[in-house]
Image 1 (cartoon, rainbow, N blue to C red):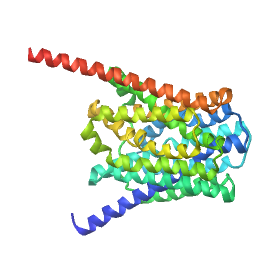
Image 2: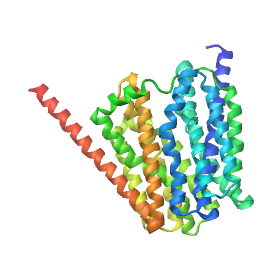
Image 3: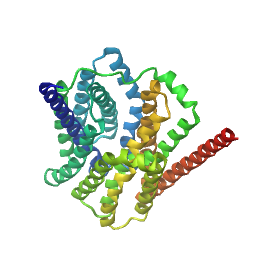
Image 4: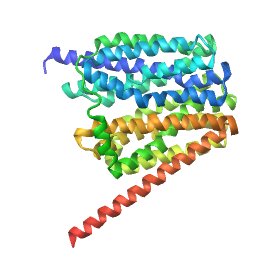
Length: 399
């Protein structure tokens, strides 16, 4: 590799890093505080907040394949990415201009439709690039976690000085910046979805894969939905907007080092043990929040998200890839993402809003504890069953 090629590779890598930092900075600025804004400043009910916050995962279930097919058909992923970023930025700006619930719900639908295409299209372009020139996808995506962590602190501080509406302006500004950066990304992209219907049917017939989707729904769904209600829990215990931002800073910032070390720990301990550890830490965290501990403990335990999410995501992705043939891996990852980040996040966010209205914030985290423990139990039973089958085959071979 000559010097000019090395410099070009480094420059493109820096563009990717900046792009992910900016995109996730916008997500970190808006969504951790959006539930608090809707509840305490727009004065929506818990059910209404749950409806708005849960609409994103629902839209993602249907919209992600559509964006993928559009990329496949046009072979213009950068242009599709530009469109999704600008649509989402525009919807976020409109968010700040109304307090009428039906309009807020409509804006949430349109925002979610645009946003649902951003991450998968971005990842497609990135994976295509690193596969072509070599590199570490995880080292690039790591800057997304750093951007998210920085944003929750900065946006929390900004709301104290300028009011909570500033979260919409920050999001809009940085996503327009991200849209401009798409012009510097490589042109090459790979299709996001290939024969997703046929592939899904084949994969869902595999017991091991189907059971893992159920586990992902039960374990990762509460982790995703908790981002909506953690701010409300801290606010109820007397925390400020800056305090909420600090909590999300600790939570998101803790993910980065664990993501970087995930491959090493998977090699040392095995995927099953890492997944069990991540689920166990999540369950214990939700149980602790059920008892509404002092704010200092809430802040301290947000660091556990590094284990529960920072380890779970890369381990689960490798787990899914290892159990599926190469020709179906993109479909398998899509189904995994939909199970946890789509259906799971929607269900847990929706049920959280219902419980918040009826029984208070404690009941939300009790439900998340029960769901996570259910997912952990299903995973342990399936792992034991698989081990028993493998031992039986070994005995037959030795006989």
